[in-house]
Image (cartoon, rainbow over all chains, first blue to last red; front, side, top):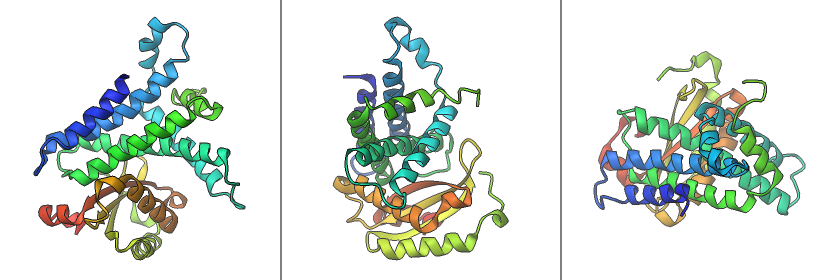
Length: 168
Length: 105
């Protein structure tokens, strides 16, 4: 099973580890792991395009959280404008593709902030519902990604995750 | 958490949008609380805290419920137009009853 899928499986285990009273440590690790599942899914998909297999791990290290956040924010904004256009877009495969891409970019954006809170904010109390909600959203993002992974717009999104070509 | 200057956003617009969303989303949503601040990269943001009914918090429908709630709040509050990123956290009514956190009450 690919690493990203292993992380997603692990996050469910962490979130459900203590039956009655989940420990904050389990919930916080689950949140962080859910983000990293999506983070590694997208990076592994991006680096698959690199012909030299032995250099893919090196390429993966060029992705940065902040730049990926900015790219995901831009992507979800573009998708939202298409989905909410007036007149509304026709129902069909194009709209489905945009909805899937929106789900991936928006989930990444949300999960990244949650991960930051889980890893660095000791004051926040997490509940199982919060964590399971995030996991279910990441799960849906995985499904959405696999529905569109070969589409040009999805591939362009992967490239954008590296940052602005002008250095932003 | 650094706060966003209150003068720079329309508190009234946000409060009335949240109220409308609560009405539309009842009874699945028990209440919505929010605070303004900065996200981890320093962007102005609004953090929504949504208390769900125990029924709506069931595992099988969490993703769908969360998506519907977030979309409704986005439409009603229009935080993007105010230059705010929106973030959503969910907990169930019984979890909040146990934790008794004032920020979620």
